[in-house]
Length: 220
Ligand SMILES: NC(=O)c1ccc[n+]([C@@H]2O[C@H](COP(=O)([O-])OP(=O)(O)OC[C@H]3O[C@@H](n4cnc5c(N)ncnc54)[C@H](OP(=O)(O)O)[C@@H]3O)[C@@H](O)[C@H]2O)c1
Image (cartoon, rainbow, N blue to C red; front, side, top):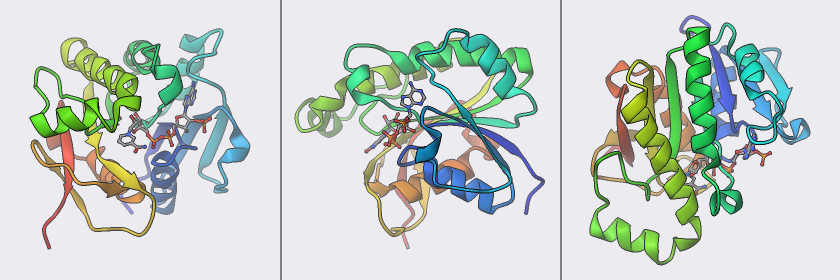
């Protein structure tokens, strides 16, 4: 095992987050998770610390974040609420509060999971991806706009933070289909588990700092 780290995880009850949490705990690391409904997190481990709360409905998010960030090595955000994100950029508002809190607490490493249909900062979507986003995946457009605003903020205003964004293409849960690798142009329809495993590797990869790349399965 590499030296024990403490990960602060947002979205630990979600489809990617629960896999990430299990992977980190199985490797002997500590996970601190903020979750709205603790009973949804069916993982028991002495290294798992669960805090009940929300990123949107919190009277003092600054104080909560200061407490959660104490002693943390890296922050991983796999949060999404597609219905709410149709009308509000909740993730952007949250990350704009989180990054200053990370600065206050001296935490520098941050991974944000966006989607493969979200454009990287200052880059255009390919015509095929643009078409998918605006037709069959139109119901998630608010989520993509929110993810893009997060990545713009990180790119424009958080250069001092070792952030990395994963523009994930996820299709389903299920058995692993292989190992994902970082790609500027290619995206695979991956499993939640494979995306979580990729996030887990990426967060320790210094070469990924300030990247907002896609992920694709490594050719066998
Ligand atoms: N699903 C996909 O196919 C897909 C594909 C590509 C990219 N993505 C991106 O990946 C990210 C995560 O997606 P996912 O599918 O793994 O997640 P998910 O299954 O939709 O779960 C979202 C997580 O966010 C949490 N959450 C939502 N609002 C919250 C709030 N106000 N306070 C605290 N926690 C809150 C949820 O908690 P509760 O359990 O309490 O609801 C849950 O743990 C999103 O940014 C999404 O855009 C998803």
